Image (cartoon, rainbow, N blue to C red):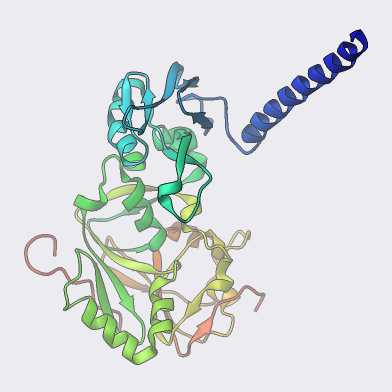
Length: 360
């Protein structure tokens, strides 16, 4: 019997040690992926926390120099409730509703709360909620510590050409990055230009038949549904945007980058509104349109000066570092054929608001 105990005890100790090492390694893996053990506003370090919490579990985390208690509780009606100090909320939209109070009381917000499930299946009734997956990202409430991840552009009162990524940032992050500018209230109109038709689809305010469905159907009938969807859905596009006021806009640099660089950009015969970003430089200190022309034949290239409301012609041969000033904005390109770019060494109120006419 003593011999068995001598054998079993080391096995148990080894098992506990292995479990401890696994837990430590697992936590360390989270931190190795860019997560921190705490987030502190004002230290010029862009930090984020990620942790999982199970049913009826309590955890304490350092957030903005405070010990914040997170507690997951299964209520009598079966719901799983998340408590953050004295604030209570369900996951998802409920947490968003509480973030204003969290920011006011404790100086931080919870970036995301996702329910964790046991035995997920196609039948949602079979899903059993076992806990929460919680993320707190400092850039959502203290963006000054994350300035290295941010870019900024200046927009003027009136018409501007902005890339799709900038608009996406304004819609999703205006409350966090741009406290003095609001997409809903400060932007009156957004138009997307449709190649092949020389017409616009109104994106904001909500399109009517005159600007939306009618033009879309005309576009589909001319180029086919697949090509129409391809053109309308491209992330490299730029839009006419009417702003009620001049402003400095901050945005996440990653949001305007292209997953496959300039080689993924397709231009269509006629005018194209193209969003501009650092992908066009491809690590170089300067840029020229000739270098990335691929099989495109440029007819005209313009920038729009929103201050003077003038079109400025750009030569394809012009090679300059000053093009960096256009990151996040858009340019107007006219080509004589459908083609692909590639890298290589070769009214404010009342009535209808209409964007400026294109250059002759």
